[in-house]
Image (tube, rainbow over all chains, first blue to last red):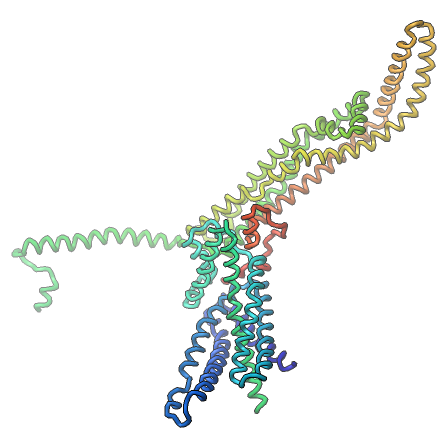
Length: 256
Length: 348
């Protein structure tokens, strides 16, 4: 029990600290991106390790012993690509969320992280009785992330619906103006990071503009809230990955 | 060498006419383009001194919020002035109302008013006549002054003031123009005034005033009864003495005598009451009106605060859905208090 709490606590630090630094420093300098590098490295390393373990386990079943293919099919490339792909999607989304989230959203996301971590650890412990280690671990991680995300999507949508304030000014703008207006939330100095994040801000502004345009129906508003809450899947997955990272590190420490 | 001759225009008098036309058009085009480009470049240089600026949303929101608060601050003293003006006829009507109150007719009108709950109308007609119209007109004027003050404050915002040469971008302009329009129509004080002075509301106000007066009137009436009993007793004795010799008209004489005695006693009592209590009554009436004025001032000031806060108010999806259902959003704290809960954080 204490071990689980410690894992979740350390994962929370590993998750929150880089994003907090990024949120605070980005308005000042582009170098703030360095704060995200440890987070990216942790996610990449864990994802790559998990994917290659699973790959090897499958290969162990599929490949005959002594086959020369075992030298070629190591799973490094595919797992590396998978991990890179996930980092490439998750990191911009997380950095955008870190910049644009309000205190109430941050609270909701923090609780989601804790729930995802706890669910993941519990499912891994339960699955350990039924599946072999690499599968029990990765399946437990997936269950933890998906269950937490499914539970929290309506909660985050509700938070978005009730507490998040949108600027009144967008009501008077045309679609292109609304896009520019959204991008205006980024620092005036621009730079490659701003260009990357501009996509999220512009997309958000466009969605909000469409909601205002079709406000005679409640569905665009509901979809907008749900869409905003979909970030729960990425956040939950990242946190579960970080919990796994902490597990690996602490296991290694214990073994030493 | 051959290459050079191919690149440069052919020299000498033996030029092909087509080649001549070509070079004319060639250089003509270049000169024309230069004529267009140079003024444009100069214009651009001038523009660079007045760069077009789209202000970030957070800055615009802050500007609007500050301008709304400044406008509120500028208008607040006008509320007192406005109330002074519209209550002036009410205060001026106090002596006239006291005259009415200290007359036999007034006494009976008020007494009937107390009994039949019609005193509020009597007070409204004599003291507050035309008050509702004056109040709404003055509030409309306040709305206009607020909109003017808001526009002035917005155009004098630090952000614009510090770079007077900077041209505002089209989006910023659209937003600022919209804000100025909203200053006119957001939570108009005139609407609040109309609600406060509406038939039901005004009747409620007058009822409050009437209740205070009714207590006084009924107390006075009971106190007078004893006095009247003595006066009428004397009247009966005098009447009996006078009507004894009137023969068949004794009954009529008695009726007239009784009525005369009753009214005489009333007149005497009312005059005595006026002599002793008129000043106190006028002071009391003034205090009641003063209290009413204080309430109206509070309502207007609260409306002004709400108006200023609503100017800087953003919206949630819940409020948007409420708007769709034509339901007013629930009363929530309206004021923008910086980078607060639920507000998108500033990135720059």
